[in-house]
Structure formats: C-alpha cells, structure tokens
Length: 466
Image: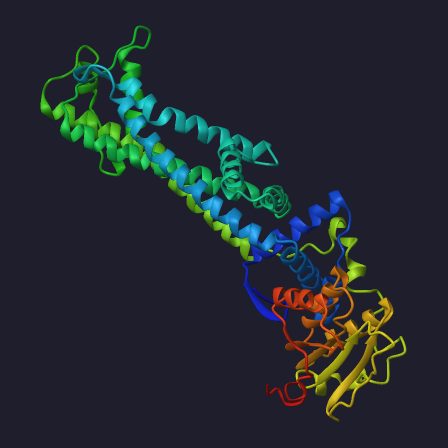
C-alpha cells in the first residue's frame, strides 16, 4: 500500500506493507489508550478529505500521527534492530548445531553409546517440538521464550526510545488476527531447522574424519526389546535409503563395539537417518506450514473497524452526518464546493496571517489569484483548512508580518497550510526599519524548507514562474 503525505510542503511517499501500516496504526492507538487522545485535527481533516471507506480513513489518520510523532522512523530503526537480532539467532543456531553433534559423539571414540548419541541429537528437539504442539492445542498465546528473546533483542538493538512502543503493538496486532502462533512458529522451527541441519553437516564431517565404534549398554532393557526399538525407529529412515541394522548386528553390538568397517557404516548411517527423520523433516514440514499460514494471514490483513477499541475514532474521521455542502458561511473570496473539481490543482491562493491594522490590506492581486483574506481567529483557520484540503490549490502564498515575533503556533499553522497546496511560498511583508525578528522569521522558514520573499512573487503565484 502506498500512502502519500505532504510534509512541510514536500510530497513524501511511504511504501509500507499492510502489516507495517496496521502496526503503526496499532501503536498510535495503544499510545492514545494509555495517554489520552492526541491532537489530531489535521490528521482527521486529511482522513475526511479522503472520502474512502472507514478502514482507509482510520489508517490515514494513524499514519499521519505516526509520521508526525516520529513513529515511522522509529519503525525503521526497530526493523534494523530486528534484523541484527535475527542474525544473532542464526549464529546461535549454527553454534548450537555444532555443539549437538560434538556432544552426541563425545566420550571414547571406539565405544560411542548409541542411546546417548541418539538422545543428544534429537532428544532436546523432540521435547521442544512436544512443548510447541501442547501450546498450540491448549494455549491461546502460543508464545515461546525464543520469540521473547528475539523481541527483547530487537528493542535493545533498535536504540530508539519510541521503538519500545512498537513491540507491544506488534504482539497485540498479531494476537488479534491470530497470527502470533504462526509468526512464532516461523522463528522457532526455522531456528531448529538451521541448528539440526548444522548438526547433520557437523556429524557427517566428524564421521568422515574420525573412526567411531557404536555400542548399546543397558542393565534392565533386554536385547530383544532393544532390537525391536532400533528396528521400529529405523524403518522410516530406511524408506529414505538409510541403513537399518539387522537383529544379528544389533545383538552383537550389545556386547562390544564392533571393529569391522561395515558395522560402523551401518550404525553411522542409522544415526544420520534418525537425525533426518525425527529432527530435520518434522521441522522442515512445520516451517512450511507456519510460513504458509503466516503469508495467508498477512495477505488478508485488514483494520478491524468493528472492534470496540477502534469505535472511539469513528466519529473523528467519518462523522455520522457527513457535510454535503458548506454548512458554515464561506467567505466571499473562496470558491464554492461545487467548483472544487475545476480548481483543484490549478488555483492560486493568497492568504495573510494575523496582520496589524497599520498594514494596508489587501493589495492589488492579479485577477486569477484568489484572495483568502486575513486569518485571525481559530474558526477562520479551520474553515480555510477544510476548504483547501477539499480543493488543494496549485500555489499558495502566505503573507506574514515580520514585525511580529514568530511563535510556535504561527509556524504550525504555516506548515499546516503548506501541506494543503502543491507549492507554497511565504511573503514577508516589507517593514520600515530592519528588525531582528526578520532574521528569526527567515531562520524558521528555512527550517520548514519554505521559500520566502520580501517582495510579493506575483509571477510565480499567477503562472508558476519565478
């Protein structure tokens, strides 16, 4: 989804995925839930002008507030931290796989206990797999320590104070759309798949470079039971081409480690088959399942407008009684709403902000320029912003009195007005004497990246020419 926002007179394009869009909106909603509603008059005005479905208007409002409050850049920092955390998990999986293989073949090389080797390779994996299945069946959250570690590392590596608000919003969003368990599954099964694959490669390297002898030892398990166990466990691996020890070989391995080379090859192949069948294959299948469910859920993401958490914002972005025309009396200098479609993108508008009585206004303006008068009251500002948002002009010239001290409210109004027009410039009216305030005005307008002039740029306003 591509969203267009005007910021300080510049058109900014954010290519956000559906997940990132809803993520930012959920972050803004959580902030407002804990700290109260944010100042959102401009955001709601942009949402109402969009004339789209309710869900789209809520997203426009959320994205506007997210960009204004720095959450979009915080999201980028968080994603960078998440990538670093993911690389740390990948490295930990590789190291864990090496440790698993070396632990399985630790001890006296010529007398490797097949029980301990098998338990070392797939025992912990099977316990983790069982815990995941139980959580899927009986737990609603389906969270895991591994996912918590990843979220914690992402927040730490992001190094952004506002990024701390993103992780809880992500968990709430995924839980609401029933995607949390599949997202956690992608991480969990992917980690184990990489670890077990590394263990397989390490095991092959160890078996290829060292000579091992395998033996089974037990005080209470009879040889017949062990033969049955080995045969039952090895039968699925035999279908994939791995060797399966016969009963005679299993019986003889219970007394001592066999020295003949063929016996060693058979036991090594059986052990590799156990790792593939009971370790790698289940994790690979579950990784594909989680990936499929995750992508399917992501493609169907939508903002839940009927959720009670979002109903408080409905009236702000889509009033129950939408205006079909101009209810408040419009000034003579503005076009009517019926002419908006013709004026959009073509009109040139002149507006002044809080001028003193000593200034002669209005000046003589070209016939094609619309004089929007002087903005003195909040109601005048609101009416003008509503009409300019509905009918964005091609060029907007804002006249200011540099003899007045520049304040934050005036700068905010100038920035808000500039976002309604394709191009905006500021006319600093001429004064009789030099004033230090003029320099302050020029610095602040440079900070807003708005062009400013001491002489009215009529040619630019009328024709777009400097």
